[in-house]
Amino acid sequence: MSEDHYPEYIAALLKAEKYPHPVDTVDLVQTHISFVLLAGDFVYKFKKPVNFGFLDFSTLEKRGYCCEQELVLNRRLSPEIYLGLVTVTDDDGVITLDGQGPVIEYGVKMRRMPEERMMVRVIDRGELQPDHIQALVDVLVPFYEKAETSPAIDKFGTAEAVAVNVLENFDQTRDFIGGGALSREQFDLISAYARSVLAQTDIFQARIEAGRIRDCHGDLYSANICLADKVYIYDCIEFNERFRYCDVASDVAFLAMDLDFHGLQEMSALFIDRFCARSGDEGLRQMLNFYTCYRAYVRGKIGLFTAADPAVDAQVKERCLAAAARYFSLACQYAEQGEG
Image: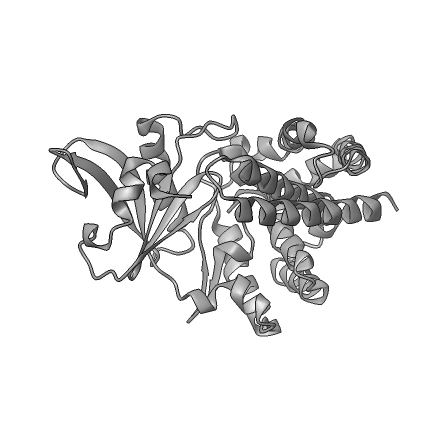
């Protein structure tokens, strides 16, 4: 995509001289909801003005509020990464970072982590070790123990509340059936399985009574983890409490599913074994298949959304659709295991 298709402020911030620190080149990474600028030792993340229903970044005020929430919530796990709020200003027609003019956009400034230590890269090189899994467990168990819980948060663990999230995915992907990534057979199998588990209201109530509904991360997978001098976990979901207020099993299932997706079934099993042992949460296993299926489907949905974004180029679209197809296939496997 050419720079003239980007928002004006993004096109301006692709120039190295716009930054108050050394920058050789600026690289842009896009997701379906964000523009991420990699500039020298720092990362600047800006929210796209989109409204998907489950998230609403449609106004400057809403984007500013979500940037502030992103800082507060992510500092729970990685305070060293989340440096502060940045503004993009219009200084007499010149777009400036943290200038004196009217604010035209808000963003989050982050410390840039070493690319080669990103968990995805470590996995791709075949270097993920049991010690990495243990380090993740050692960070996550205390995080969930300290994470906020309350009667209001507990309500998000009921079968009725979980159904809102799970069934929404089927509504949002129905129009994509038959497009190459998701077949009618897959859709019917996964949705039937999910509804059958959601009908078992007692198992969800048992998780509430066990104190397992917490203010979690919401997006716990390898793309949001760096295995550097220690474990850094970042980019939690700040835009919608109902995706973050959930059963710890749902959060943990995301990473277990991600390891399965990368063909690391033994590491996935090791992660669950060690997490359950350290946390004392053996009840998590009963919910695991349901939540891994849910998480795989969500990743497939996001692949569809990103591919449908006119702002992404053909290569990204093709890659996203291929990944979506793999996620939906994995969700089918979990559904079949659950029904077996």
